[in-house]
Image 1: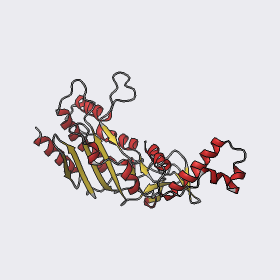
Image 2 (image 1 turned 180 degrees about the vertical axis):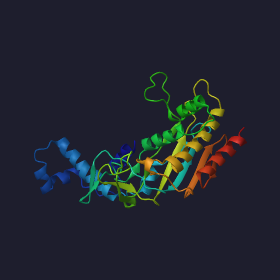
Image 3 (image 1 turned 60 degrees about the vertical axis):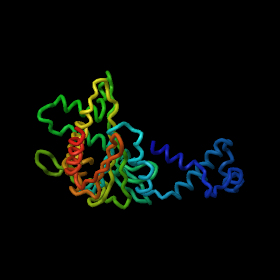
Image 4 (image 1 turned 90 degrees about the vertical axis):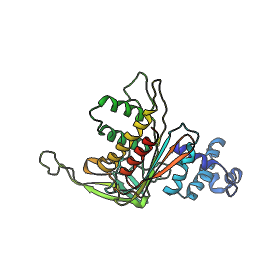
Amino acid sequence: MMHDYYLKLLLEPEEKDKTVSFENWKRNDENEKKLKSKSEEEKYLIWQHEEIVGKKKREMVLSKDKVAQYFIPKPEDFRTLPQNSTLIKISFTLKKPYTSKDEGEFHLIDGRIFENPIVRDKFTGLPMVRPSTWKGHLRFAAEKVKRDNNKEEKKKIIRRLFGSEPEEKENPLKGRLYFFPTFFQQEDIARDVITPLKRDTRTPARGPITLEVIKPGQKGEFYLLYIPYPKGDDFKEEEVKEDLKFLAEALKLMFYVYGFSAKKTSGFGVIQENLKEGKIWIKSTKEIQEKKFSSLAELKNEIEKWVESNE
């Protein structure tokens, strides 16, 4: 979806665009030479890429703030969503480094080679946490939430929130949580060196490994949307309250204890307890209620207050 939207932005003409027309572009001496063996359709695609897409890519301000305004939800966006839909915003500061494993073994940026690169958005090149990464780490934390030995109830909540497991072929269920990307800036990246150790002797297993990390102290924004749908035949309003209270516990564990990073067993990807900003919006019958919190313990308290006021 993200890349499709960018492509739409790039291909839409604007009044201020000073794009060379296709006919004039073809008549350029240099272009005539390189287009000699191309069909008219191929020429048009090359012109479109160079004169429209290429120019706009260079002109766009590809910062995390610019990207966020297109792809991060806003409270007004879910006015038409079902009652009790909830949006959570967590503006965090990294306490430990964050890293992730990109598909390639290295990146080449400005002539420099970066080994074990962090995941980047394919369009902007910005370091990012993918929505699927957030989902995976939050689900891991959800499994660690204590529920007074009521394992079956816990399973039901996790299934409602995250959806069916891939192996569940019968009656598959879509989860109620919607995740969004988190972007960092290129200057937030540093190079780190780790030395893998043998488990039994705690001596080096092999030589040092360099990898890209987002440095401690860097800031990011996490958005999570909860929609109480699908409801199912046996839906009860109490489910929403159970879901949100459970979610607050899982978020606290992910951010403060287990982290959301590769190598989280080494403590990577946890955040500082005090947040830069925290907000929760819950759509009630008449309006969208907004609450602020400065830690994830406060988020849990705000949700519990809301639950009590709606009982």
